[in-house]
Image (cartoon, rainbow, N blue to C red):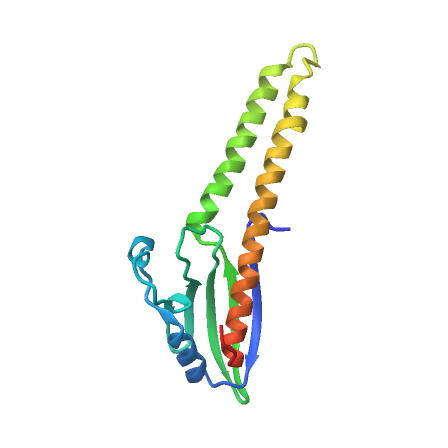
Length: 171
């Protein structure tokens, strides 16, 4: 299981690449900063860029949401429509804090264990194992589970909206 949530899917559609690009452009607005969006009520569903054969979009939120995935895709022409190679993943700016959190907690654990192990007598004061199992492991497990859970939920939501757009259903 990867540390950071990612998902790759392929979508076949009867729409031509031009139609796919048009549908995505119809529901995508240019990227803006959060504070510029806070004072307007009318929004499209996605923000980002859509080209004739690729797209890079994410769902618009009215508040700060670190779990909204970046949706990147390539549109490939096929005889009976289009094939989309789509990847869902978190933004790099959201990946850095989770990796940083894990490094800090593991660093603290290593420091505490090192301070509590007597290297000259092969005996431990016992505190290091307690810190590792009683404090560090639950902190990492909670952070990891919450982060992955919210990211996975947002990826599923973005996937459903993208599929809905391509099938012609309303958001």
